[in-house]
Length: 295
Image (cartoon, rainbow, N blue to C red; front, top):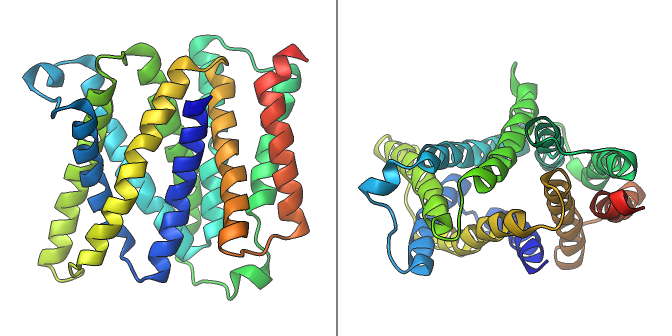
């Protein structure tokens, strides 16, 4: 359970870190790119050396690591666009509701069962996410101008986040071993760092962005925990006592619950009665998903 706790705490830290970046005027895109570069350096340090070579490129998991890197960059940016153009609440809901995708794929691909109290827990989790992340007009302020295709962003985020969770789960089930787990993670982060760096350099050259040391520092502060958040998630999925159709929802709901409580304690974010109901439902859903088969 230590890996589950690590995944929940470190992933929640990333969400809270982005709130702090906003307060200090840190450009999120630059911080994200430097974060991925930091992940590659951190992973190489943990591994003892940079693990990729010609043999690694030929392995079956390498192409999936590259796809994971593409999803990393894409999803981070879609989260930012959704938060800016619609609201942070909508971005959070779309991101976490995606837990239903790996559940469905686990049933289809691995013949896992989701029924009875466990199914009730999954359905309750969807309600809990909406309630926990809901923000009324008094919290969101003025409505933000929206473009023609703006409301497709939550759908893209929902599908992308669900596919990323499913990809991580599938690869760790099929290809990841104790010997190659660090190489797999570093490959994914290297793919994200490469794509992000190219886009960032283009924006520097065209003058759309200006480099500042605070953006790089923020990337380092985010990147080290980010690497270990995925490292913990892969280890948890590998050693989880539950099927993946339960493990991923428990992890996601733990993040929703922990993030909401910490934001309330540290940032004094106001929680409505509906938010508190969502938090309580989150606790119940986690219990039902994790232990529903034995009830």
